[in-house]
Image 1 (cartoon, rainbow over the protein chains, first blue to last red):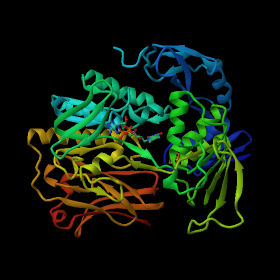
Image 2 (cartoon, chains in turn brown, blue):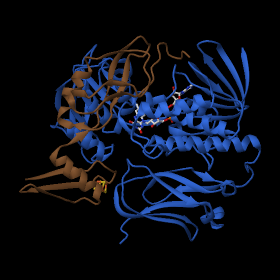
Image 3 (cartoon, rainbow over the protein chains, first blue to last red):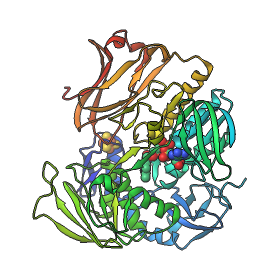
Image 4 (spheres, chains in turn cyan, green):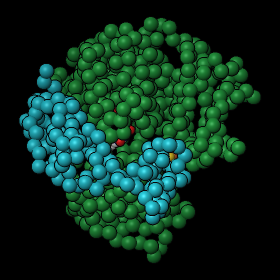
Length: 123
Length: 424
Ligand SMILES: Cc1cc2nc3c(=O)[nH]c(=O)nc-3n(C[C@H](O)[C@H](O)[C@H](O)COP(=O)(O)OP(=O)(O)OC[C@H]3O[C@@H](n4cnc5c(N)ncnc54)[C@H](O)[C@@H]3O)c2cc1C
Ligand code: SF4
């Protein structure tokens, strides 16, 4: 089986070709090792970071931006986002605080990326 | 009217203004204030919740809000004064700033130096020349981004995106995650406006089609948008008859480019570069008015916020030099001009005598090319030379010239930046 991917590791954006010959992967068209690693992962198990927002109450700010502590399987993005939309946070929350631990048993935590005080500009 | 005396007033509390204010404090400038019209710092970054920021500056892939938070914490540590919910209305040639504050009414700031850091804003519908009715539901990508990421409000169910700039691509990925569908991205030009990476991770990942050489020719609907007509365009960008297609949608997202926000700059009669739409600046990011500096996206639309912060620091060191009287202001300027395949260069001119170490040059190519060499030429002397595998218009180039390499020829002839193809 042969698949093509755009390498998203650096701006050169090589057009990778990954070929599977009896379970052995070979990456071509890459211009560096990082591209080879990306091509192999993208073929086997594509992973992405997850960023979205979660509802927060008790502040003038209505959404808390969040990020995954590591990459998660690409094909689970929608399912995991659904889980996050069920969460409601209450301010104040510090940046770096864990919003959801080990989301969907991925081993990855969902982290707050902004400090939201109860009243904005409160000391 | 309240009157304040300041050493430095920074207008705008985005990453550029924050970096400038922090560096100014570190340089020993005492009375520094950031004037910000919003109720928080961080500028546009607050609504950029996706990751990929700060690789150069913090050595880590941060989200926009994390990058902003890093800068805000540093500003708090430096005890920088901030005037929130205060909008600058006018600046005079005497460096008096008139600002309207929600707490204090009109405030007058008398400043030794000013740094302009107002950022950029998006082109709107009238600037994209689309015909048809004027219904609601036609929004810029940045407005959609603000609605969804900050206000928590979904502005539609089925969107069409016009323009393939990076913000449009980022929003194309964002909307499906929020349960909105994206019918497609339409781009007038024959190549995408955004980075190839973003085409891949924002469109391909979410099965969103990209239609090149195609544009929206009409908007339908009276009160609320009901649909758009798209058509393919020819080489002269005129719609081709018979290719029209009607698409039902309740949201048209415009991602047709950014323009530096320079109303205040124009009011001051500061020289504007027609290529960048921002003020012409020198090696310290000083504008044509002595003591008035500019940094960040008000100067030119930088791709990377890391460069935005860097420009803020350069401007702050310039402002410190101006206050301390160490800046040479009499020396003739040497112009830096875009040559072959270069659309603009920032800074536009320099006083070599003010350079102590390197001089970073920020520029873009006009068209994609491979195996090129970037040269800086002064008369018949080559002061800089570097090879690049690939150059693309959406990817800003930054090259650092050694100040010692800028030879005497430069003064007379100016420096020309070329990106020439086909090096073997
Ligand atoms: C909608 C949008 C999305 C973007 N997305 C990305 C992205 O995904 N990745 C990326 O790298 N870059 C992105 N950018 C570019 C982004 O603007 C820069 O990376 C960075 O935020 C620029 O910093 P800045 O400080 O120059 O401007 P800004 O962040 O725009 O900050 C300018 C500040 O000045 C304030 N201001 C303006 N005028 C006045 C006034 N008269 N009085 C008082 N205050 C004033 C504004 O309120 C604002 O806080 C985006 C830009 C826009 C417009
Ligand atoms: S293969 Fe290497 S050079 Fe090519 S895009 Fe990927 S990281 Fe960049």
